[in-house]
Amino acid sequence: MPGRHTYDLLYRIGGARWRRGWDKGVGPELVHLVESGRLTPATLPPGRAIDLGCGSGANVLFLTEHGFDVVGVDFSPVAVEQATRASRRYGVADRARFVVGDVTAQRIPGVDGPFDLVVAYNTLQDLRGHARTAMAATVRRLSRPGSVLVLWCYYGARRELPLISYRGPSRLAPFVVTPGEEVALFGTDFDIERLDDPSLRSGTACFVLTHQPNKGR
Image 1: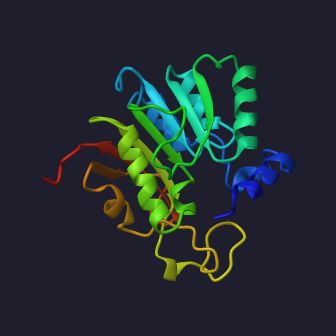
Image 2: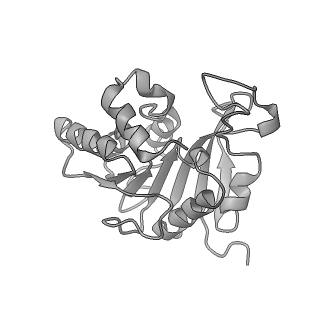
């Protein structure tokens, strides 16, 4: 995974269109889940949400516009600065707060759960080894019974990746969650549903996980 200083530089020099390789704007799956009425402050009261790896804040701003009070966390101070400015431009700074933090840390200063909705777009796949387990622990710690995690990631078997790719993961840069890894990371505490869109052949996946603590006992 590129380091914080690398992302700081990319956020400083890259325009929004150029950044879409990793900072993709509002997740269409999240839009559908919220606008369909499945995930709203009414279905997840009181409507506290957190975006782990929020980037420039597109998902956070979208959720505030639909009634959530949202915290965005990113390890890039430049991304957090840009997201904070955007919340002021959109007039939602009273319901959107951004924090510089590490999603794999045992505690993120300034972030106190539980949250009713946890969002993680394009974040888990960039972590390696123990860091993925640590992020899963963060999700558990910040959620409560009935909380929902929306998890989007590049998804597939590493052996099936192209050797080189400039548009996504490759065997040289295998930034993917492998099939079954979502169960290993979250299955003991979450019911896991894979959405139909993105499709199975897209090389990506979006999961809706509902926190059911002690479900395996």
